[in-house]
Length: 253
Image (cartoon, rainbow, N blue to C red; front, side, top):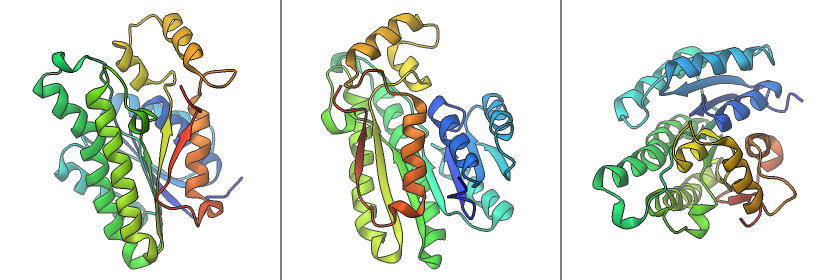
């Protein structure tokens, strides 16, 4: 406990299942939090849930992180609230399952915007603030599909593969200046992104659970807390010499 008590951490996509789990674990470890999501209503629910777990400083900022100007305002808000950022967790994203021939231009560009552009915009702002302090952590939530690819998952898998390439490139660029950049690559979990992947939030949860159980390499499907635990490790002192890694969580699917 309290491994992150001296840290200010930003979690994007905080209203999602992974985002809420990560924010909760960071709060339990004592971090001050900047939580952001495009959905302001769900973001407020997440803040309340995290506050119920731990008494830490939290500020919330609803923003569409595909817009560079909104990202600038988010980081200016963070500067005003805390004066620094120690850990950035790029968790915002979305999913799409469709054969290539049915991908339209809007689908393709939406997957790149929500999964890749958000990582680029937020990381650029974070690194600008971390470099003068010669310290910081960036944790990008990618996907196992970014490592393996997947049929009917071209746009999503391509975007997540690009996140992994971005992670490794930025790690090489800033590692000597005390900044660690790593990626988490989860297999499919029962999360908001997975519901979107399977066709929307009204999908039969029993069908989703059965599919995930069949795909799992372990006795159970991956849980959001599994991802959150790795995110805490990557933000804490114990991972100080881990840089440029894409950590597969959940084994082979």
